[in-house]
Each structure stands twice: as structure tokens, then as C-alpha cells.
Image: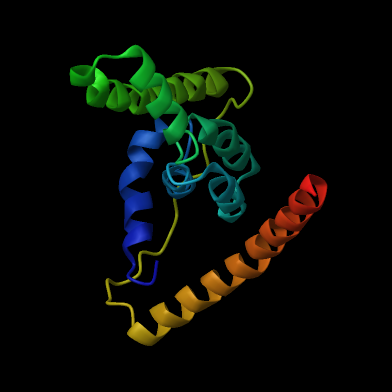
Length: 165
């Protein structure tokens, strides 16, 4: 984000996403959806249009997040011979994207009629992010994750341990 690249990616993807009823700003949350759907859905808060926000939230689960990867691996290992497993994995990712696009077109002509919000954004200059700002951001995100996730994991571990004894 600090480099100015994300705004340009949104700008470049705007023309393609308009064909399925979204603006280019929806690309970043959907891209995050390949890592994890939960932060991707949370990232839709940045979208200015309620129409784009709701549509992006409905489409994000079609992106194959890392939680789906073990399931895909298990199913592919069980049903496909070794020489076709890589192709099957790629096929599942592509299938998810195509289903998402078809669903977006369906939403565009039914529930979310009308044009997406026009893409108006000032493109920042490219710049190299400072090491200090990257380190500070990394520290804040890691600390936030550890505080929230560790608390839940620790409490769940204590409860499970208590129930087992």
C-alpha cells in the first residue's frame, strides 16, 4: 500500500470488473480472499458504495482461500491419479473464479442492477516504503494478531484440557 501499487492495480482491474458489475476497488478485497476470506470480507469496509460492498462480500467465498487448500488436497489425493493432481488443483482455483464471475453476472442482472460507482481515485506516486514504517506496521499487525488470536487459542486450550481431565 505504501508503495502506491495497490491503487494502480485497482485502476487497471476496473475495466475488467465493470463487465461483471463491480468497480476496480473490489479487486483488492477479492485478492485478499485468496489468502483468507475473513479479512477479505472485512476489507470491503473500504468500498464507498454499499452495492459494491455487498456484491464483493457475496463473491469473496468463491475465491479459494488457504482454509480450503487442505480440503482440496485431500479430495484430489483421493480421487485423482498422481499425474493429474496439479492440474486438478489449478482447475479448482479456476473453477472457483469462473463460478464467482457467473454469480456476479447473475447478481448484476437481478439484485444489483445499475452501474457500479465510477472509479475516481488519485493515483499516488510510486515510492519505496521506508524500513521504519514497514517494521512498525509489521509490529502492530503481529501484536494485534497475537493479542486477539492468542487469547482465543489459549482459552480454548485451557477449556479442552479441563474437559479432558
